[in-house]
Length: 283
Image (spheres, rainbow, N blue to C red):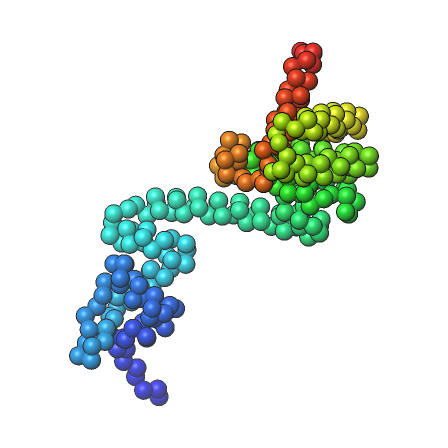
């Protein structure tokens, strides 16, 4: 026969932690935040936990494992908060986390498939550019798309992708873009904003932009842009609250542009605006 086993009336914190599947440090934290009443200490100065303490500790562990915060657990025990309300908020949080995990998995799959930083951008952007041969997209192209996606979202960046498709598939346009980039870089702080070269470069940018636009239309890329607006998944707009506005981008996104280069940008924008104003309205 086995000798009878007599359970203890109380146990030490180490035994309580071992039985509940936690640590003495966690139990002490429960005491500090008022989640688990701190029992009186015995003659040896150590805490002793009885049946009621253990039951409460076990329920704390079960609720924490379900994802309920310690503050909500304490409120539920105190009767200060309806557990249904807590579970409702927890359900919303889990739904958001599940959506985040879904997006993360999709990003990883795109990154594995594409094999370049392009895969880290949203699927509308990746889908438009992943067919391009390796090396045709510049690092600066991806940088520009990254910023555009931050400001205008995936749809804005997917529309901008037409420009980089045109550059990647038309060597003459790419060569001119590279020449203009070099000319822009030469507009350092030593160049006066009123230097005639600034206005001349703005005119060249304007001409190149018109050539890009004509190529985009000739290649049917503008039609692909229209399809984007029709087929864009509304679920992909869920990160709108985390974006930054165009105004915030101007004030928070730093660029090392000299006054002359800023002037060149302004003049180019003025020329493009004039084009738009002079274009007949077909509506």
